[in-house]
Image 1 (cartoon, one colour):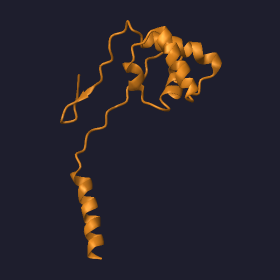
Image 2 (tube, one colour):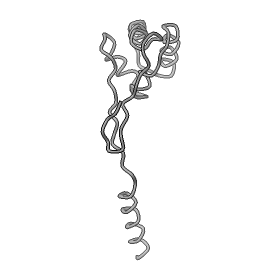
Image 3 (cartoon, helix red, strand yellow):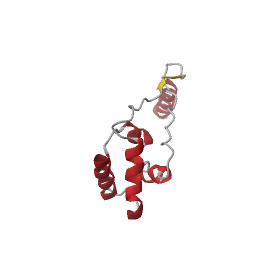
Image 4 (cartoon, one colour):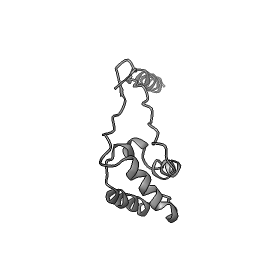
Length: 111
């Protein structure tokens, strides 16, 4: 009985001793006609930050979208080209690199 109480106490204590980090906000995808589709199809498996970090040519986005469709992304064939255009317009090689918000130790956002 004592060992169970001690174990329960140690578990509860460990929950209070684990450092807590403020949650980072997930950035929204840029506005555009295919934003909703990209949000639905792409962020089902990974967060938007993964998309925003990419700087790909239209040919590379085409390969990436086709690969994701093969892996199960739900994209209607009639929307495929529009999605590729949206991604290549907003996350192309000529765009500045994505800069994530940084969190200070106090939890305040920094850039």
